[in-house]
Length: 239
Image 1: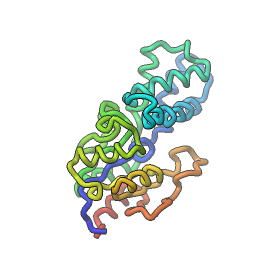
Image 2: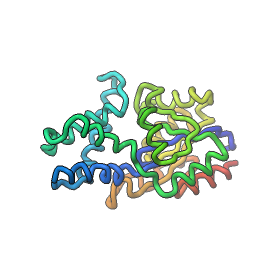
Image 3: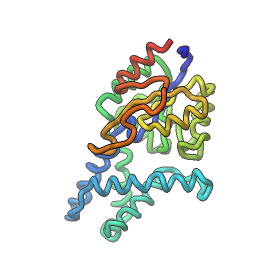
Image 4: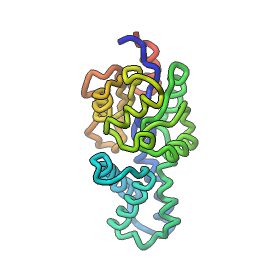
């Protein structure tokens, strides 16, 4: 493979940031303030579990595109109802809880690794998060993106091909000049099918200590790295 990659785009939730611990920590004070004896992590995991089914309605055309911010809020309301908590929080409180997704902590290697990679190429998120969400998350986590790409510009959600194609088009690059980096093999399979190069970085605790998926590369991705610092080093050595 020649070093013809002119941009690396990233999955964010799970790959760049730790949504599981961060959302749980964000919810904990809201639950404690109302003396609710429910594990905030259980709430966070259930909330996240509504994510893909909600987006799939948009991928299949059952529903028109709406930003992930709104999907998250709708899913939060369903989550609170599931736990019998929907009457305990007003709309302002729910809106504050929904901001959890703008306050996700980067993995320890993320910022340094992205900064090292940015010195070599363009870097941007290719996330299902909206431009608004990604911008606020980037400010919170000090993520050094060159620009914000992803679902909003495609008006669709990964792994729909439109999302990867829209990112390449926005950068005025051919798919083979763009590399998709993710900790999810399915994301990389979809990107590769669109002609993008691929990089796998495992996040073995994204789903907790008993995670069974995405622990290793499932295909011969162009780069398989230990973390983002290793990704930056291996990208430098592409030839």
